[in-house]
Image (cartoon, rainbow, N blue to C red; front, top):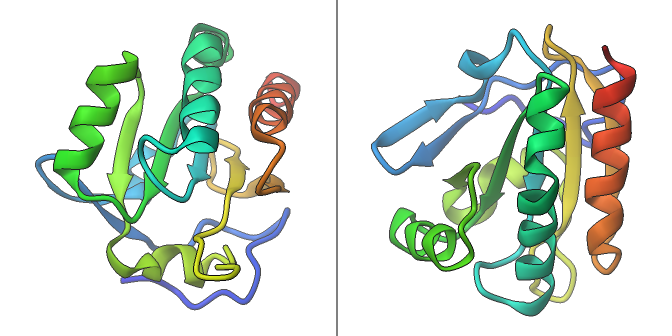
Length: 153
């Protein structure tokens, strides 16, 4: 189930959200207990999405060192995600959001038919501590998320 949310913002609790992983449904709330970075992106293997994913990959050990987990989410299916992860050696989880329902409920907007690029940082209790929304500043998603995770220590 996905709770309706006009615009998930700092201070809001994580909605009850189910996404699709390689082995079936994944409840994001099951990942709580440590900081969680959830980033929505438009599409596997596109220029900006690849740059963003590789930047998260390159900083991944810093996120892990700060006690956080990183999860990428797009409308692509598990097969596409598996190929994307393998091609770019991505160490984190990619989940599918069929039809963009979860993204829409979190306030991730689609512009001109292109799904939005928004990164959320949740504390270990599941409260949004940071939201960054930018279609073009790929690296800033990673920088801001990592700074927020480090500040949660």
